[in-house]
Amino acid sequence: MEIREGLYYSKDHEWVRVEGNRAYVGITDYAQDSLGSIVYVELPTEGKELPKGEVLGVVESVKAASDIFSPISGTVVEVNQALADNPELINESPYENYIAVLSFEKTDELNELLSPAQYKELTEGE
Amino acid sequence: MMDRRTPLYQVQKILGAKFTSFGGWELPVSYTDIIAEHQLVRTKAGLFDVSHMGEIKITGKDAVKAVNRLITNDLAPVPVGKILYSPMCYENGTVVDDILIYKFSDEELLLVVNAGNTQKDDEWIRSQITGDVMVENLSDNYVQLALQGPEAENIIKIILDIDTVLPGFYRFIETSLLGMKVLLSRTGYTGEDGFEIYLWLLDSGSDPEKLWNGILEAGKDYGIAPVGLGARDTLRLEAALPLYGHELSEDITPLEAGLKTFVKINKDDYIGKAALAQQLEHGLKRKLYGFEMVDRGIPRDGYDVVKDGNKIGYVTSGGIMPTLNKNGGIALLNDPDLQDGETIKIVIRERLCEAVLVQLPFYKKKYKR
Image (cartoon, rainbow over all chains, first blue to last red; front, side):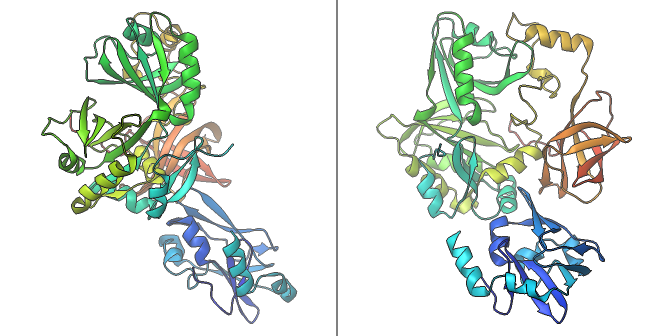
């Protein structure tokens, strides 16, 4: 199960890549493997304001729909449109295929997220 | 209470199965990928462990008459070696379970029942059955496998111990596979040709792992693979086969579920006959419809259905249909007169998503009749 360096992780198996005040959000390799084939992604609308912990989108596998929770507070500035027609891209490359990009200000919320090592511990415990 | 496991749990774990909890059992949901397993059954062959199903034997002078009083379909004309599908109803016409009845003789019947209903059915039958009969719940003594797909027949032929004539659709024989005595029936729950294989565990030669591995080995050149419950559900949805707890339940009658062919209103009295006869006479107030999505979105069990601004029912089963490359499902709607081609809206996470009513089944079954 791949856990990439240079990313922040949430307890709900999301990853965050920070570029200035933009945060790219996706789901981890562990998450896509647990879900199985992803057949539908519900993307958020651009401009949507998301407090930390609120539902950012939904990822659907054959058997169930899973909520994606926003790991930090921010405003949606971009979504990965490619996932609308090809949701399976998340299974193929979970770290290349972000779901949405948030512009954010509360940098200290990043400290509440997990490091790659901490996330590794979490997944080994589950 | 912990979920039960079938005798094949260990071998399935080694094969990489991902397990799920179903009806009190821990069973494989998939081994590789649900969609791939689904497609494999439609194009080649898949092997399912369905040992969680229940088996109840009814023996005695009055076996046929006694069971006929519990079911809506007619057992009387069924010959030895044939299988009857029937709903079993309560006095009010709603469904206790939908079952298969294997006729061994006029005095020996084997009822195969849904996993989650085994105890309920056993208690119901014992409390309601009359006449000179004995009821035995043999569920713990059977392993049941299902081999389904266009290559199933080719694969079975490899492991038959004697050159025997295979049973036709909805028929069964007692035979020997890989040196083990089995019950072999031409039945299944996928919409493809195939077999269900019952292994009686109390026979000294019975070895469930040997049977499981032997079938997978024999089918290697045909591309066989083990298949889990995830694909079992998508396959049966495409074929529009009812699932108890969804299309049939203690709230739904077989008439509402579109199973009129299996309800014989001119048969001698049986539990539920009066209520069903009334429903036939007065007409249905609600019924099951098939639908396909027009808007993006995946319909799922329990989602509301709206028409012209009003909630008219709910989705009983829904999801993706890999063979058809569509999303769709079955819904119980409070309007018995809707037509194919009419639109309804499925409420998916508060959004109204358009769908269109279609004839069932979605996928035309490939039974070898």
